[in-house]
Length: 171
Image (tube, rainbow, N blue to C red; front, side, top):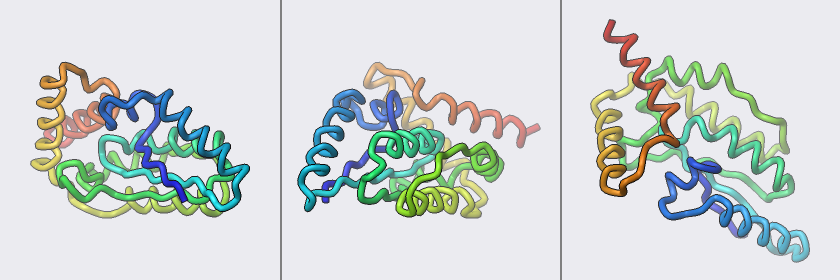
């Protein structure tokens, strides 16, 4: 098996995988997927490592994989556990509930559905949310953006949700 660790598509992929190019990743996956179609002992699989930075990117990744590689062997989901300040569990419950309620995913094979269930379970994990750790993660990303002379635009949607939630809870 050949497993591709892809934590999003487009800008989010390029942000999380610094110096990576989405088009190059797509071309490489295409090549190996085509090879796997011809050589039956080669299997293409995917792993999505879930953090609060890419939690909104999972549906697009899932639909991309399903549309382009419907016969991929398996799909896996791993929740990031370290650094702790990037863990999806840090998101406030309201944000996780809103994400789940607006989820729009295509129906796939049992293997693909299994990863959807893991994604949903990851967002249902009850945790009071640790704003100190979450803020540490945000501050670290801002510092890295300054060092790299880049922006946080690709993760701006989740940052806005966090900010809105923080403003609502402090009012």
